[in-house]
Length: 324
Image 1 (tube, helix red, strand yellow):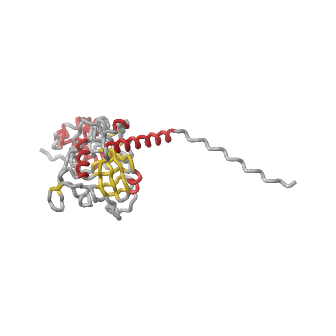
Image 2: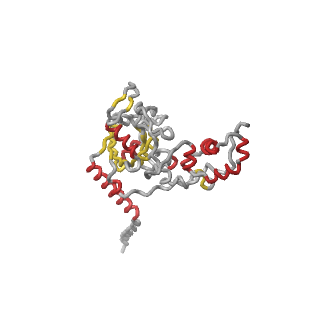
Image 3: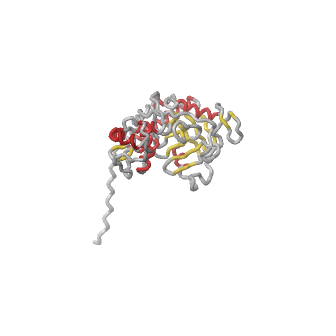
C-alpha cells in the first residue's frame, strides 16, 4: 500500500475575503430569561453583571457558580490538595486583547492553570445553523472553520475527512476521488467540526458568541474547566467551538475599560486587573436586574429605530445696518 500523500482536493477556495457571519439565534424574551441566575463579577475596576444561561448550558453554569461560591471541590495546583473554597476570588484577567475579549479564571495567572478536571461542551450546532452552513460558501470558507490558508484547509478539513472516510493511502484516494470531491462540496460546518472531535447535542438551544457573551475558554473539544472569557465584539470564528453560557446585562462599560488596559507582548495587563469575587444575586434581585436590562435594551432599540430628527433651520443673521 502506498503512503498517503497530502493532496489538496480540487476545490477552489479564496481565503482573502471575509465570509458572512453565521446567523444569530433569536433572542429569548425577557420573561424566559428571568428564571436564569445572575452573577456579579466584582473586579478591581468595577462590577460586571452576567445573566447565566442555566436553561441552555446547565452543567457549565453549575460548574461556574459552584467554583465561584466554593461549593465544589477542586485541586489546588500549588499544593496538590483537593480543596473546597471560592475559586475565583483574587484571580486575574490574565489575557486581554483589545477589540476581541478579556479572559480570566486561571489559578496560575498565565493561562496554563486549571481546577484539576475537564468537562464536556454544551453546544447545539443545529440551533447555531452549523448543520446547514457549508464549509465553503461559494468560494469563501465559513468563519467557524478558522481557515486562513490552503494549508489550514488541508489540515483542518481534508485530512480529518479522509480519516472519517477511511482513506489511508493515495491508492484509496485515487479510487474514491469523485466521492471525496462531492463530499467536500457538500460538507457542513457541523460535520467538519465533528471530524475535528467536537461533539454536539440538541437538548438545549445555544447562543452564538457575540459582543457581551460569557463563554468557556478551552484547549479543544470537551476541555472546559475554570477559565472563561467575555467578548468585546462578535466572534463568529468561535461559533461551535466554545460553550456560551451567559451574557453581560450590566457593566459592559467595565468590560470595555478592561479591554483598553495596556498589555505586554503576551496580552497580559501591565497593571493587574483582579477578580475580587464572583457571587450570584438573590432571586429577587436577579429578576429585577434582568427586567432593568431588558427595559434598557428595549429603549436603546426604540431609539435606534426612530427616524433622525430634522435639523431646525438656523435663524438668518440680522442684516447689517445700512448708512442712510
